Structures are given as C-alpha cells and as structure tokens.
Image (cartoon, rainbow, N blue to C red; front, side, top):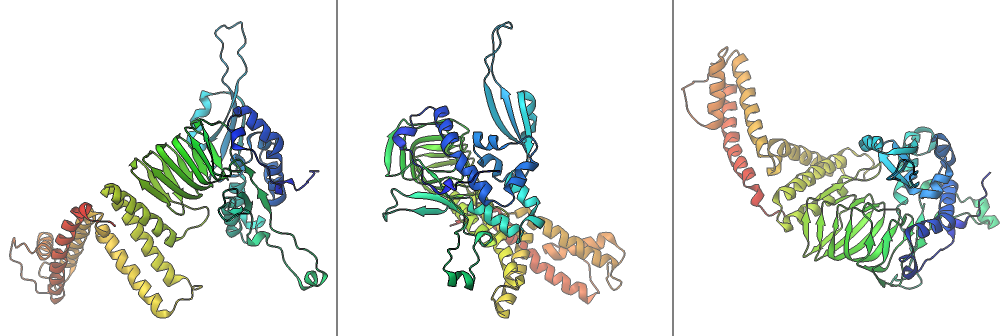
Length: 494
C-alpha cells in the first residue's frame, strides 16, 4: 500500500546561483531524493487508473519513474516506445574489464534500428500513460476523448501565483481545472458547511525568480522536467545538445547565446534569445512566445496550436511550422496559425513557403465554413448557415481548379478534364454532329475551349452549342488564372 502525504502541494526552491553550478549528477540525484517522489505521488493520486497503467507495462517499475523523472513515461508519443539501458564502457586491453558506464535511451518506433548498435543491458517496451489512456477511453473515462484531451492539455503548466503584480517572483503549478476533477457540491454539503476538495494541483520546483542574471551557468544534462524556470537570464550558458524539457514553465526566460538540439515538450514558453540562435530545436504542443533578436532560427520546428514568433534582425533557415494539438482540432486556430506563418515567411522573402502556408490557411477557412453550416450546436441562423455552405462550395471550386493561385498545374489538369468530358458527351450524344467520331469530338471540344480554329465543325446539337459557348468563357478565364498562378510568387501575402 502506498503512503500518501500530499507533499506535491508544497513549494520547493533552489536559487539559480546555486543549482546552475552543481554537477549534473548532483542535481539529478537531489531531484530523485527531494522532488521526483512528490511528482510521482501526484500522478498516482490524480491521474485515473495510473496504477493500472503501470502494472500493465511489463518490466517498467516505479523506480524507473523516480530515477528518470516521470515525464518520458506519461507524455504523448502516439506509438510504443523502447527504453534501454546500454553500456558505453571501453577498454584497451582484453584482460582488463571495461569500466561500467551506463547510458539510457528512449527510442521511438521510427528509430528502432538504433537498438542494434548498443550493448544492451536492459530493454523495456512500454506505452506512455497518455497513449494508454487514449486506447482505454471507452471504459476508463466518462467523457472518453474529451477527458483525455483535457488531462493532456492541462499537463502544460498554466497556474501562476505571485504576491506582486510584476510576477518577477512567481510560482507555477499544474492544475487540473477540468470537468473530470471538479467536485460536486450538493445542498447538504452547503448546509453542513463541509469543505469540498479542490481539483488536483502540483507546485513546480522553482529554479528561477527575481529576473536575476547568471553568466556561464551549467545546464548540461540536468533533468529540468516539471520545473519553474521563470524570470531568469542566462548569459553564455553551457547546454548539452539533445537536452529535453517537459511540462515546465520558462516565462520571461532570456538567453544570451545559442541553444542546440533542445526539445521543449508541453511547456509554457516566453523565451527571448539574443546574439545567438536556436539550432535544431523543437517546440511541441505547448504555449510558445519566442522572441529572437540578432539571432538565427535554423532547422528548428514548432508544432503547436498557436504560432507566437517575433523576429528582429533574425535569419530563418530550413524551419518547419506545423499546426498540431493533442486529441483535438480547431479549423479557426489552424487558420490563424498558418496566417502567422505565411506573414513571417513573406516578410523574410520566402514566397514559396509563404504560399504553402497561404494555401493551408485557405483550406482551414473552407473547413471552418463547413463546420458553421453542419454544427447543429452552434447558435447560427439559417441565413448564416446557407451563406457558409455557398462559401464552402465556392472555395472548394477554387481550391480544386487553381489552388488559390498556388497550384498552376491544377489549371492545366482542370482544362484537360473539361475538354475530355465534353468530348465524351459529343462522341456518345445521338444528336451530336460528332456522334461516333473520336477525332471530331475531341477537336470540337478543344476548339471551343481554346478559341483556336483548326477545322470547321458545325454542331447540330443545341446542348453542345451552349456547352461550347460556356467552354469558351472558361477557356479565356483559365488562361488568365494560369498566368496569375505562375506570377503568384511575386504577390504580397501580407
């Protein structure tokens, strides 16, 4: 039986001037002893069926969560993950045993071939808690996907408290203020004045505060998951590549220097980078506000609901901005995301990338119009629904015909399809003058569409005469759309 002391609500702090100069192993050992136990307690106490999930992961133990921190075992992957312990010790002489040096890896399915390269000491395949919960949604959660989405989203720290209005010495927390955890208040409890418990809350380890500046601090391989690193300025910090930060807050966090190959998973980020850059960094599913000043954003990716990116004298190279959210989708949010990305690339002088996000923006707008029409729960009048439906079909036609100017090849394909369709009509139409004549049917359709006379064909069918007139109009319009599409890269996307 587990002993629960509810210690996960207490506030723990470490001064930046202290922990930034500890050795990595000393810092991680301190957290294993003083911080990770209360976080694991919080997860056992708060997350539905957490004990059952752990019992189903063959070979995985609670000690693993306490040793590595629980974030890697609960975060969303969307697939099975392999955890391995492998030896990297070497020796120059066979008679002298190699020094035991153990490293740890979390390998996703796409990198499974890496396992064969290691001298594996221990290997465990597991499904993370969020992925497991999604697969058990039908019986484990009253509201199914909605409950899982709320839990996953609220693991991104949003709680913030401070005694002053400037939030320079604020505390951060994870708060499950979601319907699944909301207490039910009855008339009897109000009459008896019985206090109803609040939703679960975890106070994060405070590692920042006060807006202090620290030069040459060592982040290295310190495990910074579930931490509050707000209001901190690091000047030329030492950060090991492939560092990962999850479920943490980095508000008013400033870096003078560079960060390489760092992953921020479900973090509340308000970061300013100056005189350096972000290289091969990943921002996943969190709330990001990134300010780059006289820096470089290179080979980095942002996968989130919103794109908060501010650039000043900054170069952007080979970056990927993708709208994504956990277990939910909003066409309005996706439209806003790609609109921001479009404007960023347009300002930087990348018309191809700006056009790509412009097309995605318009597609999201089309989907949003369909949602307005089809969603019965929306308080929208009949007139608005019909206008939304007409707008949806009009945008769909433009998307298929010329991709809003971003797909000129679509104009050619649409033209060929129209010519082929009318040719079939002329070939099989009994009242057509080109009935049964393949060459004449194709030639009549081509001449009508392009307004180029090659051979004289007098069409007897009134329907085909009218169709030919309509095709003439579409032919002229298609030429204009094709020219506009080919020159669209010079247009202003702003």
